[in-house]
Length: 172
Image (cartoon, rainbow, N blue to C red; front, side):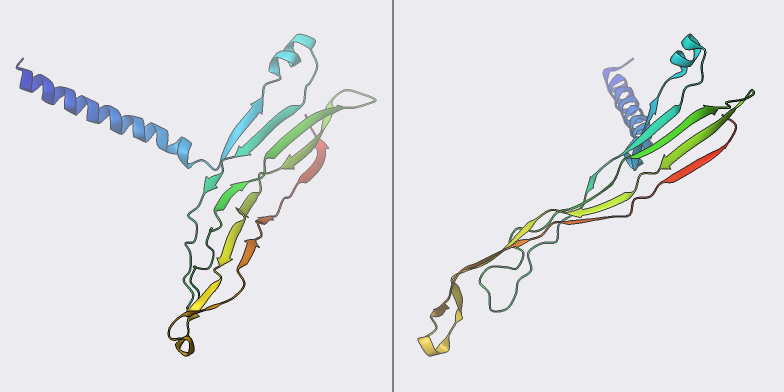
């Protein structure tokens, strides 16, 4: 096989491997939450008793793009000098299901608590500054007016709507 043929074949194989690797990684990156199961099957089999089912979800935080500074007429420095960074994610979720044995007789009922991961929207604190010089004034031969400097801290934002369900019923 010629060296050029080997090089071409190696380049094609590398491209195919990159496409397959990217296709395999796409679903994991696109997930909003990561499931966390708690395996208790070994305890159930070793102790010969029913164990609760426990699972959780951890959200994957996704940073957004900040709004840039806004230029306002009559100010030397832009509004929102240090912009707020949006961050989307969620609160962790949990799914618990515990067996409840019958006091008299055979069989089990269950008690379940389900708290799905809730969406969470946040904004980091920001900063807005005003310089001690104002706009040029024609009455002062084009020199700017002097004023007191100002600074404002933009408050952070936190928005979510958590929820949970509690249920009981027959069956384990």
